[in-house]
Length: 518
Image (cartoon, rainbow, N blue to C red; front, side, top):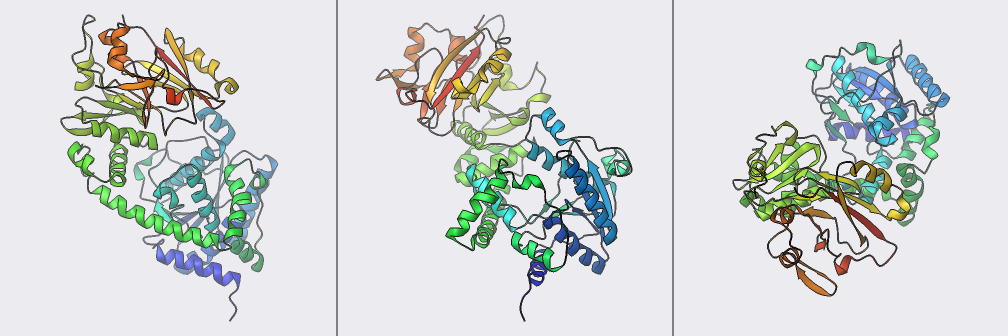
């Protein structure tokens, strides 16, 4: 018997559901329905499944307010199709461009987060529903892997799109749903006390796009085409249209190979996660224990401990800085992290503190020990280490800021940043580095015993430089040292390290802003 595309797609759909136990505890499914080929195929497959198992099925279409009349056409198509299939339909409207402008994020990221926020809210408002189904397929998984790889991901990124995961907690509102009969807003009570566990499933994750198109053709399923899918200005569209076809020239079974790799990576990631979890029963961890761990485990441990205090994301530079902080084991040393969280070395442990909730009068022993009384010398050395990113980097202890701009002469951003900071800081110092010669990620830290770096063909010790320039105790404590993974690249007020000196067009401009000590 010849296998039709319909048989192949239905078989992969059923296999994924069984392999990942996607319908365990399922009472009802909310399916994301864009009207495209993927979600149209998923809707038909779920219609049959839910009727057989007596499971509630609701479709939701999100109108992003991006494509004008075309988006209105899509919403009407989805409504009409659901009426024909006898599927309950919800329409959510949003002005994603305006929301992205308000939040300072990209259109794609804002649209995605808005959709999942609304999925979660609908689930919480409808006791029938326990699962959300979306139509990510094998091609989407490969695109995600390539996107993550280009950004420099680890094994988690190579895992691609997970087939099933918890939907997560209800997000804060990202925008307002439109009023009217089409809107799902009327069903929102505003009271999320009834929030239940929700599961996100992707039953088409092993189905290739060409198979989905064949399934739609064989079954006479109409679908709409989003005109923005052809715009290669969007990263994912470029990967889909340009990168994957070239990889398939090297290996016609590239999508299958990518699927196999993502499965292996997820298995490895799960194993590492389980190992790391054994060290995260408490909110803190002993430095002796953390520093004895293999780097792959230690990285996950600090990420998991941080996650107990903030939903913010730690970048690789933050994780590297945390591990360096732990390796120093210096009592009172601290590091500012995203989400207004501070990591601190205290009593031989790595501890995380919510900076926003601490009282300025007694924030913690480390800050209390740094207080100045009548301009007296600090009771102990100021210890700090902060990762740096392009743009403005502003810090509270000690109080200073840094601007990093690549190819600044062409960037046009400096005046905007400078205008903001010059109203806060009285002085600034500028240096230019060769971005090709900087090894890994820049960070700033406090001075350390034995610090030295090479400039002007000679090795200079910071202690002697500071003595020669008669820097006060306060100035020595607060002056940041700019470093990469090989060591010092610049100290404000002194020359750039020979190895990082700008001698090409690949320039990274750095400005240090500060207020002189009283």
